[in-house]
Image (tube, rainbow, N blue to C red; front, top):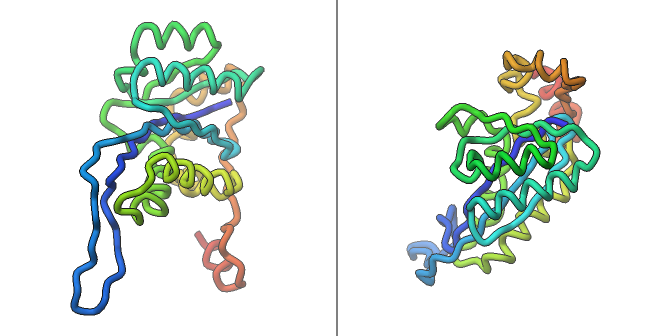
Length: 209
């Protein structure tokens, strides 16, 4: 099972994207000044679009190691190869030792290249749909509502958000893909039908891409 994982810091006062107000008056965006935050973890299977979502009080070695244990429990019995960035909690010696003990092979993405992580597309979608519309959200409720939005999607709906079906997705042309095949992986990158293309004209435009 080929997975990618990433964490996102959600704050209590995210930037407000838009707001309603009477003509000629400024929209009010009350803020509390609180600095509360949560860490959202997402592991995505690039072949199926299945996800595992968790929320933690912070981004550190302990919470990431707990995330690894959840990944192992979720994909129990699978040979897991996990792509991730080189954040401090990820490259810690104890983290690597735990991954080996759990049978999870870690493969690190190049430094300072967040665009290579498909989960970044998932975060952009969730931030735009939920927290960005709430000037002072209930933090935990906001995070779980964003998670519910993602869980309500099918795998085929999630993968385009992550850019996986795109012709620019790097994994099929990654030099190490031969190594994955040697391990017995068959990498299938699905091209899902557009979930919103209900009318013939829209479907035709999708089919031309």
